[in-house]
Length: 373
Image: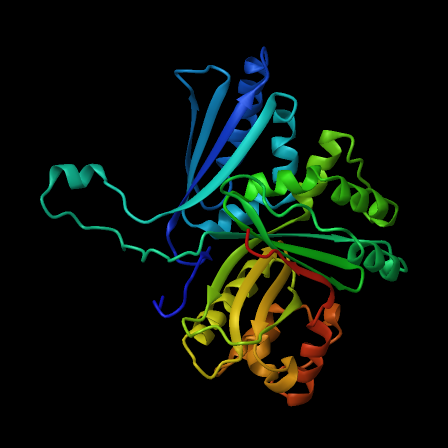
């Protein structure tokens, strides 16, 4: 990876992944939790890419537990944790756990037993550390009943922004909301603790009022007063950021934000997201590229690319779609569900490239930034 871009996040650097799950149990729920963990452990052991896991109990507070797991890389973990199988696997734990916190880390350096015994062991490939800006990104996506799109857009556009400052170290930076047909995508940028910010937002009266107002229009029923119903809905709606890159050049005076929707063929979502991520890294090194920054979100076969660009989106359709370079259009054609987005046939033609850009460009509903404290 080039140092010219300020890469804040990437699931595609090839490093192993360490997942840390902190849990606070209800009193008297320990045996129920242990039974649920054994069930989960046996199921996770057969998931491709899983290496190992450990269950730990605090020596200071017996109600605090820690589960760590190691994975060959981030993509197989993300594929599993965002699956329906995972939703069902962890369900028995919900009644045992008062609070949870999940953290995911790339393993950049490690000491192995061989290094302690030999002076010059064969070291694994060292992954370059990424430079961040202290901002975390996340998105939610869900569908509404066909025919209700305009009403939902009106409700979502009319909400009052919640208080930006969450605590001394956490602040909401930006919320961008888009629609594509009956699909809604809400992307947030948070300075500080992402989980704290998401919880803060969910408790705000103005946000809860909007959530209640759109409930009748959702294709997936939910009851926000029921913790289990709310948890399942937001788990299924999660659209994680798998890659983010910003050009190393000085920020232009004016950039425009767009969200592009790339429905993938069944089972190809992660590969499609990887293609776009690699393309955006190359764009970050190209001073002529109109793409100043990009975030790729992916869950199952849903891929959304949020870009800040200079100039008009259709001025350079190939660059806007992330298809610069020989063979890239053919790669996307192989991975993209063209029928789902209304563009079938070769993406090597100018006509289909223009049609794809037009069909992929999501409808902006609202885009709100928080000023300095």
